[in-house]
Length: 362
Image (cartoon, rainbow, N blue to C red):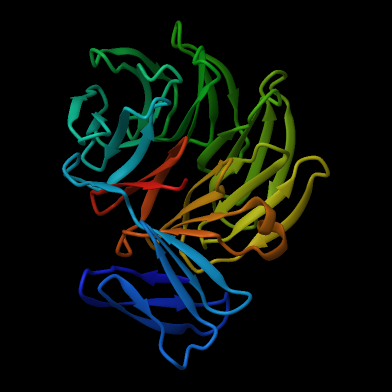
């Protein structure tokens, strides 16, 4: 279920396009007058209710969805399409990168830029805060993994060793070590103290497009590959723990807080694996295009960012039983969402249309 929604003060219209995988679309049109939504007489079972920035639409007894509009849109941070975004734990700062190679730190209240972090050459594909919020990790087309001071902009450490662009990065625990994966097919762990590579995994599965770290004490790292395989390693022993085959180019990956692994693909599907039984549980089929990013957040559950400009979340309780989304985050007009980040009660999205959007989900 997707839709284009805008509620005006006087008279306006919006539509909801409902489409099951492999079936034809059904278009539902709604009228809005003075903030009140009117349902046409022929839509007997259909209901729509607006609650602040949320719009709950019920088409029938089995199909409903909540659409969430942005609380804020940051339109003046970047001049190029936005590859990546992350928010600090205190949510006072964001860091983001774009197609022009700009890596910027900015405050979230008014969207004022604090400073640019300079050092990378050309595109910066990923940027992440350390838990302190005072240090930023980044990687991009120049094959380098860099560490920057937020307070001064100083490029404190540069890790060199990849032979292709760096596609994804992550900070391990408090930040003594970090990890990166690359187009060169390797997954590397680095020590931030001396900048040396302390572990190197080579799955031999083509480009590595994304990586993920498990929560808690499991200390697992997973990576998604061009050849459709997902690999899981134990960071304590460096040994391979699991290997899953998604049968097509795997583009996004994440763990939940339990024992599940989610792998997104080029064609828009999401594979769900059980790490305890080492079994493939299900495939969530979508028609949203490439899965660019997957994360798992306690309140929302599994959240996916897609190439058709949609961001959607799947509640843990209904994911396995129905495979249907709970929330849709609106705003992008078909431009790809390349990255998403959450913190406490907000979600941020990085879009090709040069806009970063902030949503509330309390």
